[in-house]
Image 1 (cartoon, helix red, strand yellow):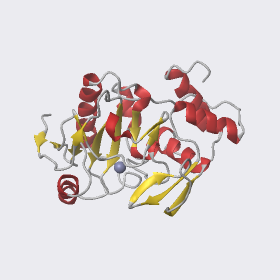
Image 2 (cartoon, helix red, strand yellow):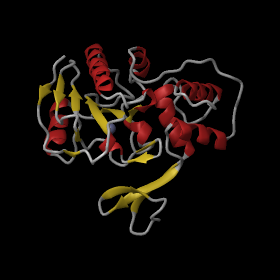
Image 3 (cartoon, helix red, strand yellow):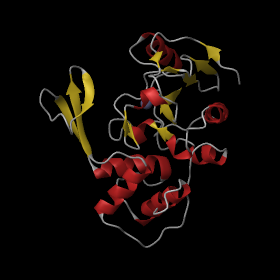
Length: 253
Ligand SMILES: [Zn+2]
């Protein structure tokens, strides 16, 4: 499906040496018209918007940075905008409302084209906004079609049978971090922007939020174990995480 060009005002050049290695999927939480207004003329943007009927709009050229990820963290990289492509999918809440057939087909086709154009996008780097901003974000939600997308060659999936293992919290945290998730952390607002508070401390920051291991397990479950999104790293959750690490080539997974 050929995208319709609706340029956004909000974009920047990729920094020298930056290459696209991550694909970030979002739900808009707004209807199409409001989403396009915000993403074209507000303070944010995305490369693509996919409507409920499968229509695709291109707002920002893939060669340029769009402002969709915000404060974000994946595989030790912070601030994913400069190295990612963002797709906003029209859905008021992907944790409550299923994605339409037309939308699933359009997002799948578009994502396949994007990963073909950018071979540095490793399968584990096909992420939801919630994966890279746990607790702060919950999109594209537990009803997103990650399994079907992986079957089409975009991203990973696991349905490995549960082992009996119930590792302690530190091991779960280490496994999640090795796959790409941030460790537990704090963030807050400073000068109107979200910042991580680990190095700079809390001076001058407001609206401080603590992101716990349970919050990060919830992000993992929304993506890889959507039938149980409760922040408890049970045997099935851990078995899938270990299997995903193996699929990603992490030998000790
Ligand atoms: Zn988002």
